[in-house]
Image (tube, rainbow, N blue to C red; front, side, top):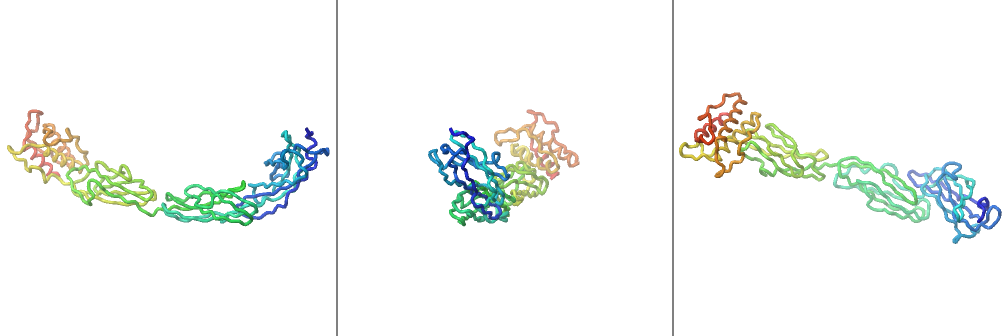
Length: 426
């Protein structure tokens, strides 16, 4: 083993000429060359040189605390270097920055010599460049469309420069990555695409990386969405008008947009409104109608604030047209349909006066199977009395004011009185 103190004897060190090419946004390099030592300090033959550590930094004394790269000895297998030249290229440096370099030798046991004196400083030069520089603005691009812009990457140092280009959504690399530039001045085009997915202004970096260096360019663009959504009513009808005697109506329909529907709302020109359940397929349950014409307007909105509207004119009728009108005493059979019609008419006039609809016993009366009971008639009178009180009028007088379950027979006069009292409030 050669004593460590005898290392680094005939080591001649020197930087090759370094040229600074001023440029904005470039990756820097520095070429370094020296002659491998052949003998130890004591003059004995150097036989176990394994590698070098090349320290570099912006301070005047880079060794041994700055960054370094490991360079293998040119002798394989380990033996006498015989004064062979050694050259490396430092990459990933800052162009225009002055660097200092110092070198140590490492033997096969991993022992490291003392640091050489720092060689004269040199300024890192670029090995590739990208144009254009500065912020590249793609301008306004419609959502769902795209815009392209070409960058040029150029070899500015000779040799081979290989690298890749990456960016982040909504920007993407269409072509030109990876790239390989052989020889000084070799150029390749890189196409960056802006594909906005929402109405917004975005900015991000496009990173060109080669030979350990990275050049970052900035791109920006604005997504625009001038296309309004569409909206349609499918139920209770596709037609623009609809008639009903039921004071509660459920609306259903669909909406669509090139990006997406964010909200569907509704409004009744006679009062009431809100937000539908769902967007592309939406529902508005239990809309309270007023007697006469109700204009129901449905509005769909997208993220850009674009809107579309559609309307349905709904006419709520009273009881002027009723089954078996009037109900004939001694001949007309009292049916479930008579009760259902009067319920709908009473619910309508209650809603028109700001009252809630009544909670009916047996809310679904099935004609031919559900028997008509005294409680059904009692509830009709109770609900109608509430509407009269809300209107500030005296409640009607009824035949058989006290109805006894399972004893009172429901008669034609009971239904005719209710119908007349309803019409008096319509």
